[in-house]
Length: 299
Image (cartoon, rainbow, N blue to C red; front, side, top):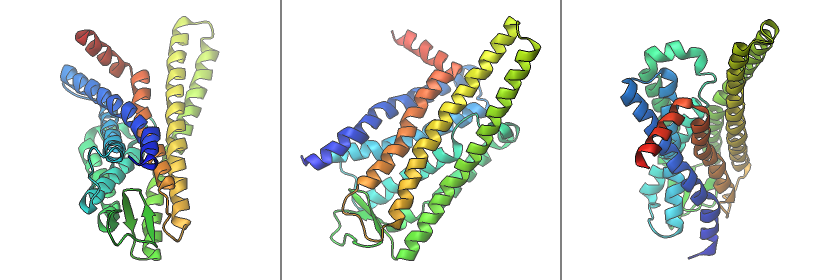
């Protein structure tokens, strides 16, 4: 096997697959068990479940298929395969960006979401599949004899070949806007939540400085603040790097001979999809308790 294909697979995609696939599956199982036991899911829980499904798609469709193709186990990267893989990856990635992180700006509209959650999810799916339609139109296999040299993005096994420099810039600007808007909204509302938590904590400390009950409540608030900080850091750091690399790619006029930049983009975006279930397992007591129950039954 070509060492140049093995190293990215072993160093990037394989590690994310090993962590991300079982992690997301465990969270999904925990919420399904919770739904079975309580006969329903709260709006916030349904949102986290939807986020986890999107993250699982990100890891499976991009990282797992790339790993298998690198080892020549399975190769889905013909023209049709490239269109399908890139389309599903970009749609699920966009959904992950729109939904993440749970408990931040979604919490401020939880009453509205509880009443219209199905329509919200449907709207997000339709919006993101529409905005990702360029993946179907412009993707082709790198094995194609007419592999492009201009106005294309090198994805190692595939190319996203745009008909002109203008179409590449328009499509890229749409993608950047789709990413930046929810990132900005999430940042703003997360800062507001942290400020409110801090003010509430200070107020409770002033009123009940020596109260044990107050200490418990303040501890819960601090834990909530830490979870928000962890999600915000992962979200902005990883997707921010991904978005920055995409902007850099758009500024390069000629198709890159190496897929390194695209590999790094996929790595950082998929890292969020792989690590977020670990944060959910640690921070969500319902998920943690269901997984403990499952492990005891299997032991």
